[in-house]
Image (cartoon, rainbow, N blue to C red):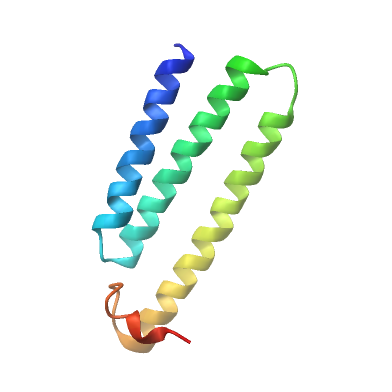
Length: 101
């Protein structure tokens, strides 16, 4: 496989995630779209690391940091979504619009 194929797959993942994040009203589906977008970015970064600078370990460290940040983001997002659902019995983004500070 070549770098171009990996980048095409990464762009596809990012585009599907962007569509999912912008078209859904459910908080969980919105977070899944964001997760797909981040997976596309990770795939592109891993492909660049593998094909262009595979001698060092900086690319691997970057990917581990991004995956860790994704896990923390998803945990916090699901905690907020669960708290909103328990407080207001809504799981849509429109129902949570009155939460501004």
